[in-house]
Image: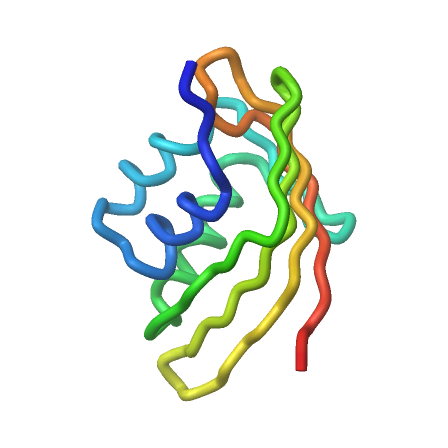
Length: 118
């Protein structure tokens, strides 16, 4: 099992896509994946739709890992990202990301929350 990193997933899914979206999602997210962000839970299909919307709006982006920890099938990362949308809006956030990894190392369940950075 080679575990995935959320910073790599963000780059491949939204900031610097090299793969088609379904292929990128399959690379990082296990079947049955659930995503919880600030109390809203999405199943894998709803998450895929959210990613497609984000991908279509991002002109460029970068992510910087501040802290990262693996403990067996548990994973945590604190990172900052800055993205520029196609309309010129700049979004700069710090995120706290907690996940359970599936046996194959992909994300099975994710919880995240964050805040805007000036």
